[in-house]
Image (cartoon, rainbow, N blue to C red):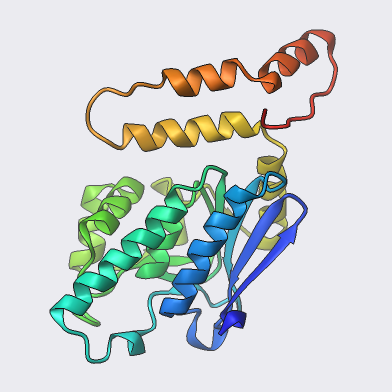
Length: 254
């Protein structure tokens, strides 16, 4: 079972590979737990600057939750399941460091929920996005998962995807901003993106993520602590001096 989610530290990134290609990387409950553990691992290690998510096999990122997990479900089981998915996706969305999703093939249901928690997403021309539950299982999404889809795709597109069970292809996902690139050479594009992220200013990246999280709630945002931490950092002081003296800066996150 541990082989179904592979984790590897490569340079300054933690790479997570969903590794059930024979099942299009459909998620078991144990795999969701491994994903939550990876989210905790990347934040706990000061040497890591990014979390990278990818599916094995080239046919799918994640093709939803393994349907066999639902056999014998009751209404109470459904509530508990959606609450657990909310916990895992919440942990992924709460990661302080950039999360990158590299998507090749189908990104379906729970897989789309995972991808929505990434900060940056790139895909191959074969990538496709859907939640076809209106014609497959007849189940539903939690309000929190639905909110993530609405933020990522907009309400009208999300409604059409779910109600008509339609698929969004790579070009539509690019046009609406869900993908930042559709790559001919996904491996090369992914490595270039990861390098760009892990060499960026970590406190700037954290501040943007933190304030985006705060903006997701209604009401005014008090960001004084975020602004103070960044402007008061040694990284900022060093970067100002480096810019003025044309000296390269090495980011420390402090």
